Length: 624
Image 1: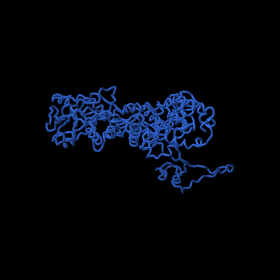
Image 2 (image 1 turned 60 degrees about the vertical axis):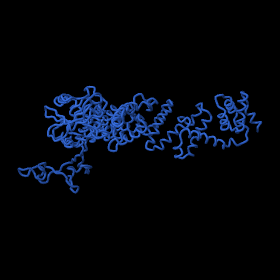
Image 3 (image 1 turned 135 degrees about the vertical axis):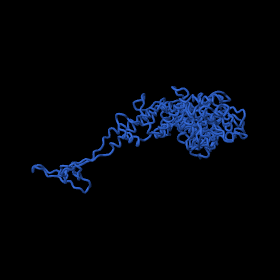
Image 4 (image 1 turned 180 degrees about the horizontal axis):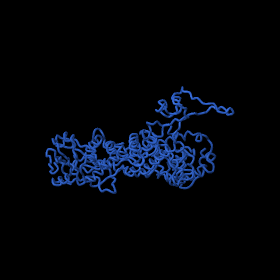
């Protein structure tokens, strides 16, 4: 949108979107109250009919904010930036891409684009959804070339006088300039000055209440030909057109209740948290229990007529029983502390815990602590399907946040590049989607349970990768090695004891059984430098060499005796199988059946030549 001077005058006079801006600013203030304890006292009104003003002041003074609560609720958002995977495609020529990559690593003050998104956009995505990222062109914008100082900034909704949203973009924006900003821009004016940005210009305007005057010395072309701004949130308020809401929006009412109940609990703790002392009173020796000395209250007991011990050295005298028949009994206690009732404390603590659990479930679709779910079996074990779907609500929400972060990342990167490279078509940004939501122990339990329940191999692969990434997340070398080993070990999801249930070739079973022995011969640096194909070849070589040294292959026992009836039949089937190539047949005969290399070659050749089944045992015996 390109504004004319009459339109600018109308905007400054009428402030057409003032209601939207005011609601957005108030919403930002409430979010900051819960997230940072900002203006906490204003949020805790007096509970009329139940407390006096002085009690409310005490409650406000000692109430703890919900800052720690919202920190815990926001913790999963960090997973968006630590997730595995992701890529950035610049769609540029090689030399241009090198420049763009370098620029992306230091977009402002040493921050890469992704780190800037994480450190500056993420907090305000949560606390100021109607604020926005704004791309600035520095003080050298009139120099040639003008692109040397292009960088992202965060603009709070509190700095905005008026704007017109269009989705998550802006048609125009009007900033209120503070006195400090006017001094920095060297504008000598005691009146109001606004900064206005539309699709064509970025200029400053003096406003005297009726007339708008554009300051020509502070008018610059908008090189982007669109307002270089994108709102912090993609979540639309269903009740207010043009307003965005925070990720925490659905938790705000629960948070208000949490804050109120927490403040009441603090008041209760002060009023009833201190034990009170009580004892049987002795008669005041000064006034003899009357409470008066003459016509005035007794100065010793202050008119109480009784006195108490004030020091551990004080002695409490007890009278003898009035009747001689009554036994003299030394009392166990003549005074004691009255402890406060803990019932309310337990109820209040439980209520706060339940409120936090409800907020976490509302936000992420799962509880933050293990809970027994409906539909679980009697022993409390989840099914394989539940194992996979348990994290899905949280993953779905994180996917939304990740997509928002990708959009802002692309927005910044495109604007930084486009002023330098003509006809630039834009980048493609994808963040990783492998969110590490749980620790390695929990993930191993899930993987084991899914394997036990017979989950599909694709799901088992994903769960195993999740476990490895969680366990070795801070050790990239070990992670690299273990991810490759996962592809090298035959039947990686099948325990050795269960391998007989599967129709695997004998050679694959042998590789499985000797995988641990092979791995023990390798150093980490060797495995790190080898690719999966090289590892597989090395394992096969190891198995062949080890099998040649087996005592079973060195004795002179006839093959028929070694193998027995079942082994003989297996050997015949392998020789006759047209789907097995000759080399594999010879290796199998040598490794699994102990046939010498010469005999293996001859036996396979005979089968190929005659294309009929032969009795290899007789051939072996004749040769012997």
